[in-house]
Length: 180
Image (cartoon, rainbow, N blue to C red; front, top):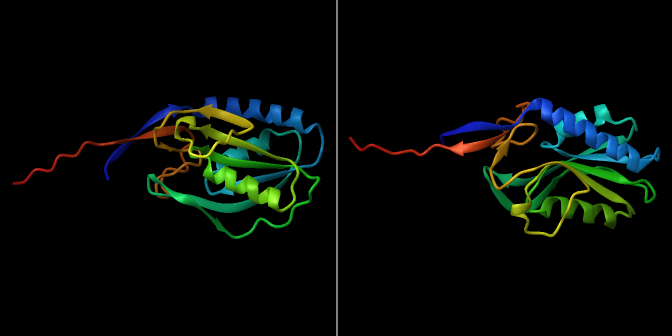
């Protein structure tokens, strides 16, 4: 597979937008205790930057969730491990890198409500509304993008490019095979 990465959203734009989201979350939480639940691995850079700018100090928990194989959504949500117990009156803010089909965040929020959590909110780095298969809207969205396959700022292609400080799109190279 041959491809290039075209930068879409620069690191400084990401920092500025995450700072704005943190201020919105602080206003909404109004000093009450809450849990920031990050979905590994993709949400780690976004959650770390968000937490850095929050004036509120949530309890941080993490759970590994996967729904991709290569550039394709697998169609199922796999939980690897457990994120522990939750108290019904302590809100949970679920943080993820990308909201596309809606299946992952819908499943996570349903599970938290099954566990008795009364208030579940969501924050995503990128919302790809055009890809929705399950009706779901995030409470906090940093950026909205189209159907491009994205990497960087936590998003990856088979474990690669997650560490990029910007968000870029994967552009597949047109390959022509020469037969000698």
